[in-house]
Image (cartoon, rainbow, N blue to C red; front, side, top):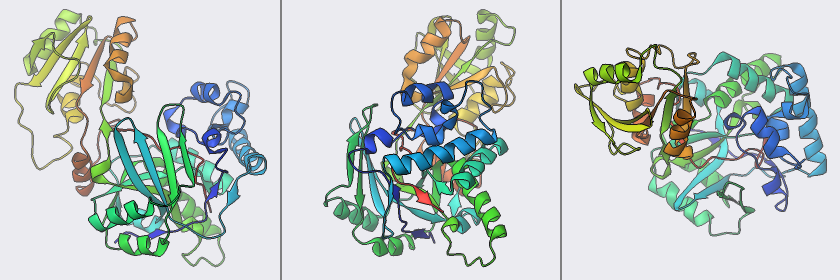
Length: 408
């Protein structure tokens, strides 16, 4: 059963929270972070992307970058100021984006649950990214951004959440991307802790590298400790836990930079050997098992001629897997999505217009628009201890870093 724990959040004052809160470190590049944080010394990007305050070209994994992160956090604590709560709390975090709304429970989850697969995964992490987040965490002694978890919805927890949001919020602001963020104290943290003891499993939706780094940091701190008890703060990591029926996944589309030495006509003929092809199709496929392809300034609709897929393997049956196994690999020669520089991934929030632009400007030779992976797909793959292909899910709206910080 899932273990959650209240924590004493380090957090900004309400009148400064909109300035501090920043996008997750891994959805912005260094240059994007530098632009977003320009003229805003309180932006948490100075902590999560500290290379923006060092000379251009600085190795983002250098010791100087992590030292700068620690210096910038200390400066933010003093100048904002950030203050740590006196009493451990559980919080509620609501996101509103357009007509979509979701409310999650903010608490610390057990590293033991992560290690023992009570918290399930669907993504293989990269060692270099794990190293980065572990180094960042241990240098700051803080978890500065939450791991995004989900669980199969429980009506009693839904009721508790709605009751808690009747009280006055501690934060309520709209970020520059139009997403509204509202946070409350849960009036009875113990009640939430007890309720989650009845939840058999939690699932990582987004934040696999943060979770892995919390596990690695715990192992290192445990090794250093002379009297490890299991109750230390480093045994828990910062999360926001949403019910599965509130999540929204957008497609993670693909672009490929060349046609593997084929002309557009030759490429299209090869595609037609495996797919039914419809010309002048919509830019967005209507149903799973369909793809839209933008080639030579024209949209084509694709569906497999042989659509049978092993029903006992939830990974093979994913649209992202079928596209890889029947087109990207055999026709375009893309064997490894993690390392091949010829392919790139475009979050669905940027729309199919972005795919058209990249192809039209010659930055890609072909683009593929997909149906989104479903939350049930994610749960099914996780339960089977499967690994989704890279860039299978794009969650919107995004949580923000720097609002609630967990000191370890």
